[in-house]
Length: 108
Length: 120
Image (cartoon, rainbow over all chains, first blue to last red):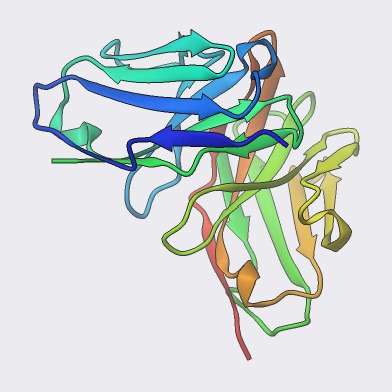
């Protein structure tokens, strides 16, 4: 069973800084089928990145995804105040079919 | 625009059955996979399963023996039933559209979520 481990658990940064979030899989992710989501308090998650590096519709270009195999990264180039939230990675295809990481909290 | 809306009881007694419905608007329910995901208080996301518009299902093995999903294309609704619930099933339940393609599978539209508490 594939497990996604996100690090760090909490990341403390300031607006304007660069954020780098990691998602490591316990085994290779099928065809880089990895997505990233942003979740703010009291809201549903929002899709940011799919296929490891493709931005979802309407997502600003300060968000970028990279990686392959077992190591993936979400980068936010210049943090805006609205970017402070919890971020989850999610894989598709390996058993179980869909799993999420435990999340990284990005705080000011 | 695409909208998903969960509905159902917010309180379920232990050992009983949790039943939720998701109503889809703004898009055809056909040709897509529709999923349920839950999030216990203060915790992360857990995928429960999906149903294809034709009725095919795939469940997370951790819940498989207790979960049933159905789809009603005429009403543009799909549903979730979890039987024999315990306090561990207390969570916010989300319905979402699962898009499966060349770039894998991801959830591009979500409902707002509905909280369900299991308590006597």
